[in-house]
Structures are given as structure tokens and as C-alpha cells.
Length: 526
Image 1: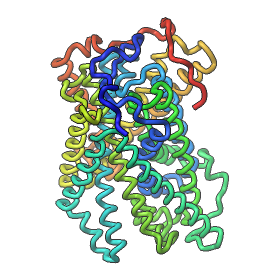
Image 2: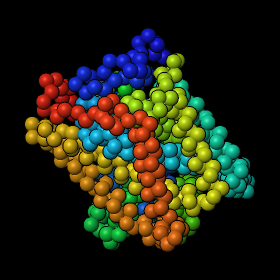
Image 3: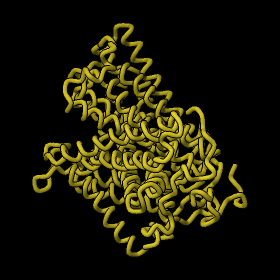
């Protein structure tokens, strides 16, 4: 059921909250409920894809302590999500990091926070499309029994052509109304979660029956982060853990389209993070217990299977149903490709709406009430990036994804600190306020800031990532810094073309919350 056009606010209409000065942008109001937001959040994280890619490398870094690293990585994500929730309750706006950082720290920092989100999501879109292509050919080869079909994915011309088809299809769905997105994601997310649970249960049964490849008894020490061999291994594992949780903030970028926008997005973010950590722990424990951490044929430290652990273990664990795992990872990457469009498109919309980017980006489709132009530009940017990187070097693409971790820490951290500073006049109004507006976002933001600086320093080493370098400096460092500097250059250009935003005339810093006469109703629970 679509939302009638008559019920929609128009861009530039009266502010949604006079105390905030934020205004609606013409998106489909009330089209996403709590369950829909959680499902889209899970889809954006893409548990089947991220876990099959991250499990092997994480095992190599920390051994059996993957569950501990998952729990430690979960902590900053949850703390930051709680800070996001508080900001959303006060300022429900589709610009999220951009809007909130601008209100807390001013237009310049706000612009860079928005750029961090857009750059990170555009890069990951290209990666998701590439993964979907790889698994499409793997699945065809698996079902047909002709292994050589999988090699077609290594042909850059075929790879890029099929990738562009995936990208166009995902963009077309995102271009339509949010009801279409929700209906598609219900099916895709339910399928991949069901297969992952089946995979875990089957592995546990194999271990219990004595048929595990390298059966390893589960121990409480697996959950102890202090049991990790070194700080370097711990930091490497934590960086991977941060990546596997990334994507939950899409629940906040839909805040202008959700029912009860002051509370639903924040609750959806917290529920999404909690649900995903439970799924990751189940997978990590059962698969380590089944395959062990050795370098044998199916051992999780075997470099030949690390890039795709689920595919390698599917046959031994599920037997004739092994193809289900390939289908799950394919649907995971494809569904995440579609849902990930939500974030950058709505951030571009918000930045344009408040005068930080050309007004063309703020155009809303008159029938679907979605940011059509912003969605198209995001798809084109991700497609061009993937095509160029695929022909230049596979290592460049791989190192760019590694550099993605820096950008995640960058804009998540900025947003967490924005929460702390924005609510500075309310820190000690109550125990709840001190916990959710000061302690949680401060600790979460600090952890991410430390990871950002650590990765920045470590990645200068040419041996970091793929081992590629530019004039003796690691390629991961060069790519990460280049993306951030590109954002700074575009920002300066926009400040010349559109000075009103950068003077604080369209989205200025807000008055201290304690001075307001009205506040949103306090939310209880998650």
C-alpha cells in the first residue's frame, strides 16, 4: 500500500520541530515500522557475506578467541548506537551524522561527517556488487558441476558487466518506495538468517556425533579478550570486528520515513546490533568447534579457504544441501547492496536540502517519495569506482575495502562525540542522561578514535594490507587519506559556491538543550 501524495510534506516546509529548525524533505512519512527497520538494518550488515569473509582472517589473528573479539567489537557499536538514539530522539533527520555533527560542532565538521558516511557506503556498494558476481558464478558452477564456470568471474569484462547489472537492479528497487524495499528484504533476510542458523546447528550436530573435521571443545576462555596472544593481534581482530557490525545506522537514516520517528529508529538500531551479535557468536562458536583453527583442509586458518570459509565448509557440514550456503551469501550481498543505497542517498538529500550540496540532489520522486536523483548518483559513483578499480588492480580494490575501516571509525566516532557535546547542558539532569548522553557515546567514540589513529599509523607501513605501496607508504594509508582529503577539497569548493550553509544560516549550531521550554518525551527501554 503506497502513501498518498496528499499526505506528504513538501521540501522546504515548516520545520518538523520549531526548537530544532529542521524541516521535512518530502520522504514517505510513516512507511517503515520497527520490524521493517530492523530487517533493513540486518540486511545492510549482510551477516552471511561479512561473516564468511571475516571469520577466517579473524581466526588467523586471534585463534579461538573470535567470540571474545565479537563481544569486544560489539561494545563500541552498542555504545555508539545508544548515542545515535539520543540524537535521533532530539533531532530525527535523514542526514543523521551530517545533521547531528553540524548542530553540535558547526557546518565544517558536519560536512565531513556526512562525507565519511557517503564515501564509506559508496565504496562498500562496489564491494557488495563484486561479491554478488563472484557468488553468482560459484553457485552456477556448484549446481552444474562444472567448476570452470566459477573462473568466469575473474574475467574483468564479464565481471564488470554482470556487476553493473546487479548495481542497476539494486538501484531500481531503492528508487521505488520503501514498501518495495521492505517486502524484498523480508524475504531475503529471513532466508539468509534461516540458512545461517541451519548451518550452525548442523555443524554442532556433526561435532556432537563425532564427525567434526577438527572438533575443538568449547571453552569459556574463547570469550576472554585477555587471552588473545598480543595487543597487535587484538587490534587487528577488533578492526575486523568493527567492520562486521557496520551498517546498523541505516535504521537511523530512515528516521523521517518511520512510524514514531523519535523512538523507532533508535530502538531498531539497538535491536539490530543485539540480534547480529547473537548470530555472530552462534556462528563463531559452532564453526570453530567443528573445523578448529588449524591449517588443515577445512581448518579456519587455512589460507586457501579464508576468503570464503562458508563456501569451503558447506559441503562437509550440509552435504547435499551445500548450495543453500552459496545462495544465502549471494542473497546476503545482493540484499545488502539494495538496502545500503538508503544511507548515502538520504545523506546526499539532507546535505542538499540544507544547502551543503547542489539543490539537484534534494529532488524527491513525486510518486515514490524517495531521493531519486541522489540514488542514481550513488549507483553511478559506485559502478564507476568498481569498474576502474577492477581493471587497475585487484589489490587496489582489496586495500580500499581495508581503508573502509578508517572511514567507519571516522564518522561513527564524530557522531558519538557530537552526542556528548550536543547534550553537554543535560549530562547531569538525571542518571539516565549521564549514562546515555555522556558515558556511552564518550566511551564508544573514544574506542573508535583510538582505532582510527592506530589504523592510520599502522597502515603507513607498506606491509599493511596487500603489501602494495606508493613511494614507500602503504597503499591502505594512501587510499584512506586520499578519500578524506577529496572530501575536504569538495567541501571547500562547496563553501565557495554555497556559503550560506557554511555561515550557519541554513543549519546552524543549536541552542543548549537545557534552555529549551519543550523537549521530546523521554523514551524508556531499548
